[in-house]
Image 1 (tube, rainbow, N blue to C red):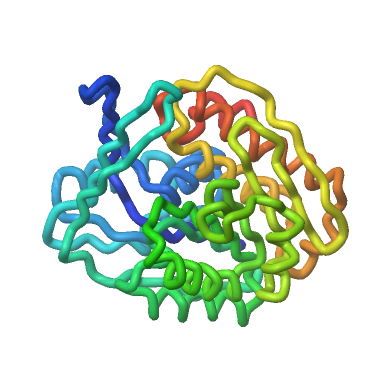
Image 2 (tube, one colour):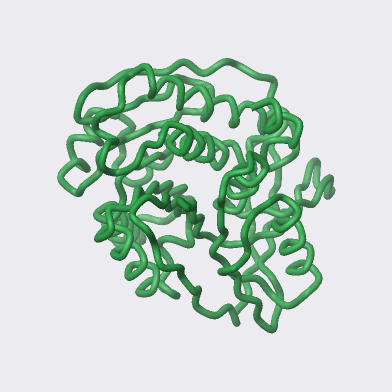
Amino acid sequence: MDRIYTVGETTYDIIFRNGQPSAAIVGGSVLNTAITLGRLKLPVQFVSRMGNDQVGDLSLGFLKANNVGTDYIIRFEGNSRLALAFMDEENNADYEFYISAQAPSLIFPDLSPNDIVTFGSTNAIKDEGRNDLLLFLNQAHDKGVLTIYDPNIREFGPRELIETRKKVEENLHLAKVLKGSNQDFMRLYETDDADKIFQYLRPLGVKVLIVTSGNQQVQVRTDLFSFSFPVKPVKTVSTIGAGDNFTAGLVFGFFKNNIRTGNINEVSENTWREILSYATGFAAEVCCSESNYISSEYANDI
């Protein structure tokens, strides 16, 4: 059976508005993707770790309740990761993270060629556990697994740029689909021009580049064609999870259309537009609430 493996960190998000906590929710960039895929009844496993505390218990129970496999989740003695999300007037979040110092290395699955792997965010570039992650991604590469990478780069100082870019490009050598925001690429390369970015990254092995720009058009570049996809405006309540659910829409579209590494260069523009309709639709659905994932009702409609 083909499976989807999502590799990332578990974070318990506490959301602040006007200086006061307004909501608390199980989160983490790739976890948000996993929950949406689980609600869509896809065979998804989450590869992560969490503390042996009440927050970890809540997170693990939430994953199971939403049909996400937990076979590759490690529990450790200590506190789970927390994130404080301070919302601005435009409902964008500024984060402060509280991270456990005791988290062990991840345990990775053995892959089959028709599996899909998605990974990204800070978990994909930090030094701790990086060798294990790269070994897993090399296994995926060698088996021809479709890998989807979302860098989700946070702000960093000029001194960190060279090291961050080096790690991102190591990851890109082992990824087939790169999906990032215009902010990601401005931070990494000081440009969000999709043509320039694809020309630079294509020799690294990237087969598909997708650049999102909030409520602006999505830019797609492949070996066959380039095009823009419109984004419908919505009244935003929170942008937390929007990019993660865009990724979930891509994975859903790939899985539904049986798209893998071997045939991704043969995907027609019409099929790409179908896939992007899922991606932008999922992101819009999440922006209209304080949830990090699509609702169960929306998933049932899909």
